[in-house]
Length: 209
Image 1 (cartoon, rainbow, N blue to C red):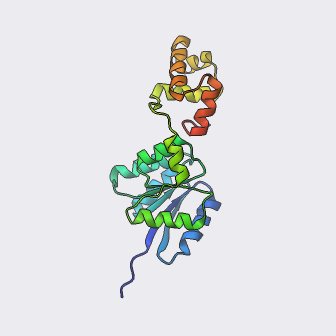
Image 2 (image 1 turned 60 degrees about the horizontal axis):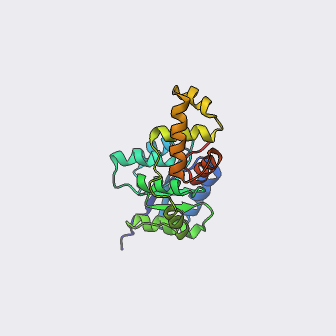
Image 3 (image 1 turned 120 degrees about the vertical axis):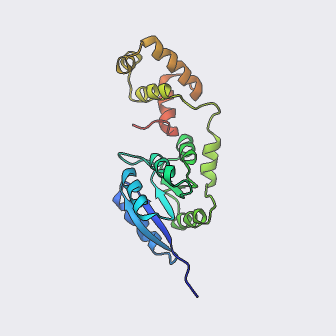
């Protein structure tokens, strides 16, 4: 009887301990093989082109290029490629962006090894894997909370602690324009002040420092 080919897995994570730990876990499975290890999104894109893995495990936040951007980049040329986001972050915006980019599964690093393996098998089989806690967080995403480019740009500076005057100088716009955008941001996020906006944006994964 001819053996079925092994599921070829690419692992992308900026922490070497996580990369090699996942490689060891996956390699113990008789029906799986790790074909490549990437330390960032740019390496992941390059290795994907070289190796054509069946399933790619992608860390959400990596230096240079994060997991979401790497998935989008790969999917431009390989629209049916399969991805699992593996991360410690589970804000509703993180999950929304991963799903919109084309991830078929969202796995938290605190999950058991067998759940990660199960996610790989499911995604390889054409299914999805979204744990209940992830679905609950995604469902909590406020409606009509999508920020426009300028709003997101200003929110990132708010999260860094810049005042309206400093933001205006940074972006070369008037302070009145900044105040107008900040009011819109507060409304979209459903919060009452700048501090709460910054906290919400960081917790939900809308911005990162």
